[in-house]
Length: 105
Image (cartoon, rainbow, N blue to C red; front, side):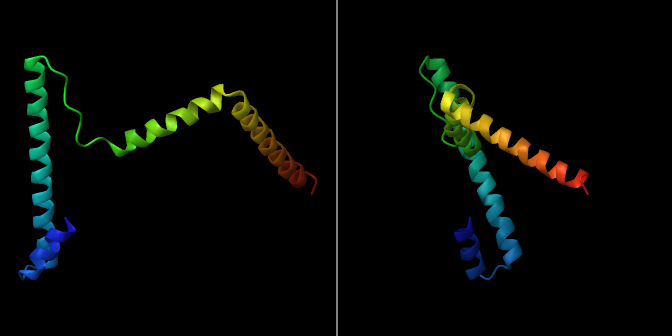
């Protein structure tokens, strides 16, 4: 995208127009790739084959997939559960101390 903007600017196009054109080209290219993948999936279904993997997986889902194990550990691993409980107790004690300090004044 950035490379295309620079190319257009070298050709004498204003920066705003270059960004608009590059953005439009990028969206068109992305849409074409998405439609091609949809068509590949249709062909695979018709032939009874396994569907092709998504060429553009969601980065958010990927990160959540990596973190899923740690979230599970928080609730089911005894060591981690103990640590979380201890942290909650410390936080409650700090809140209690703060409240106690204000009331005493």
